[in-house]
Amino acid sequence: MADAASQVLLGSGLTILSQPLMYVKVLIQVGYEPLPPTIGRNIFGRQVCQLPGLFCYAQHIASIDGKRGLFTGLTPRLCSGVLGTVVHGKVLQHYQECDKVEELGPGNVQKEVSCSFDRVIKETTREMMARSAATLITHPFHVITLRSMVQFIGRESKYCGLCDSIVTIYREEGILGFFAGLIPRLLGDIISLWLCNSLAYLVNTYALDSGVSTMNEMKSYSQAVTGFFASMLTYPFVLVSNLMAVNNCGLAGGSPPYSPIYTSWLDCWCLLQKEECHFAVN
Image (cartoon, rainbow, N blue to C red; front, side, top):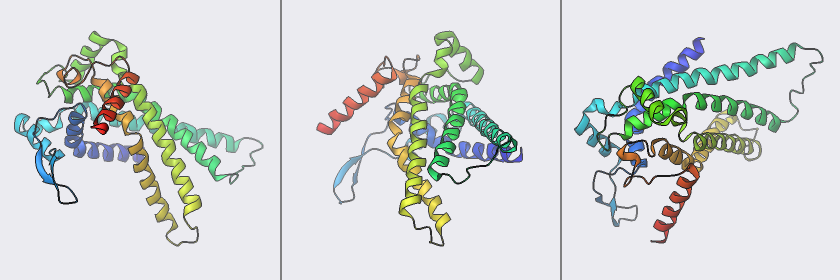
């Protein structure tokens, strides 16, 4: 219980600290660029046009809504984080209790060290189930968080309070409105998790020398590096999920010209790929 409480407190603190940057990132993802490019230099010393950084965007938001405005959407995001931590812990706890029952049962000669890769598969599968359950339950709060942020673009006040936002979504879109963008988010989480754990296993097993004295430290670093690499590869799923969560919801930021109306998340994915190819050619 103490561990769960400490995880909730730590997660809530990190959520509060990262809220302004999360806010800016979401606005950029939907195509909101209120500040003109500036002239700067690249790594080769050439003059190029550069978009303002995250802190410039944050200052722009603060100049309009004040510093308090940087924490728009914090309440549903905190609810999502707390509920997700609790659900994630409960699912893993259930698996641990099942293991204890198996150990106490008859004929429990354990194949403890049968295959380390089998253990990775088992642990990753359980983590996948725990994360998926947490994502499924907390996604409505995620949708409310994104919409309350994106309404800054059109200066709307449609999604202000948590309870009012729940009523608005249910009245206009029904139950499915709470799960807009869920599928790409789930897919991204699952693919990222399996990539991260599989790559970390391969690196720790075949690339690192088990005789090195700092073996445990190296393994922890490899886990962090592979996690970062996996999150980069699955970022398109995050982007598509966020775009679908705010698409055609009655906000300027989810409608043209900031965003076309997508028929499905696959339609969104294909259109983004076409835009990427277009920019690459030009």
